[in-house]
Length: 287
Image (tube, rainbow, N blue to C red):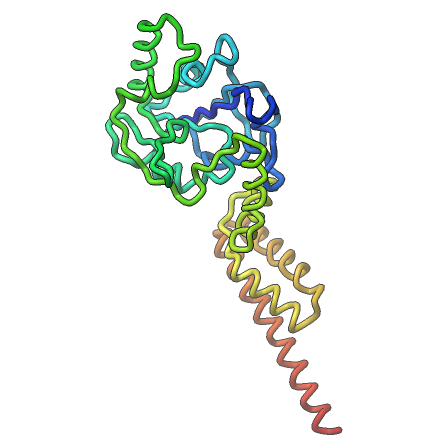
């Protein structure tokens, strides 16, 4: 579904002592980049806040005056978008994922959809809105109050017919305090998810978008390490990646190319292991 994205990144971060919150890192990547990674297929992405380096191109804007609050910031972002559907996100969501974004975009609400966290709280800055309805409500608020500065988001969303999407684990976790940031950094190192987090970070850093069959590659590394020598594991997986990239350049599907190269290399490693076992048995028998 075609959509534009607005990321609000201009808050004062008072609970962080005024730190540049979107530039703080979790897992070696800034909070802002982690949010941008959740919506890579947005037709236009607008970040409302001070300019800073990002891993992919975005458009920048600011509310006038700066620091006018979320409704004013959202209005500024809307002025730079044209899609009928607009995804609205805060810039401090380290675990927001593409599946959650897809669920918001696909939800059937007349005016859009909003994430509801595990505690039953609505998250208006993790939501997809019908742009024209949002513009209309903002115009009404401006006419009623004479300004958008300082208005709470609930004043904007109260009149909207929004579906609620239940939050996936951690998708709505935000970093408002230093303790939140420390908790996020600890969570990505938890045993059950550290490999997924690391692979996602590496793909972002290298500018590639490829589904990685982690089990296949780990099995290959194990076979190469046990059947040949321990240093063979990283070298073999590197060569598999190189071979897959070469195959993809000739038109092969990248994921299938990785799977096929992994299969061939794993078979070779097992043949090496079989030869070593046979030689060992022969030597033991002759001794």
